[in-house]
Image 1 (cartoon, rainbow, N blue to C red):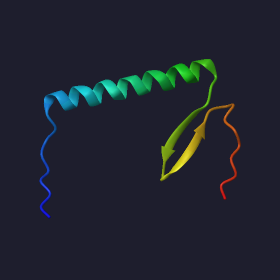
Image 2: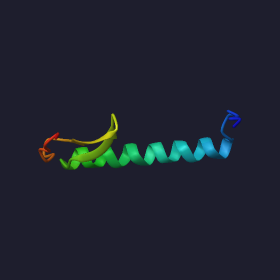
Image 3: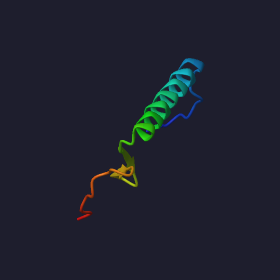
Length: 58
């Protein structure tokens, strides 16, 4: 199987930029409201924030 790596189109870059901005705005809003956020890091769910539930890592 041949994999061809090419640069994303201008439209794709604009869409990705918009999505990144939307996520950043949503996370900032949650931070300001004192709400926790759930993110994916190191192949697992991570709860971030002062009021994040304590999850057993087992």
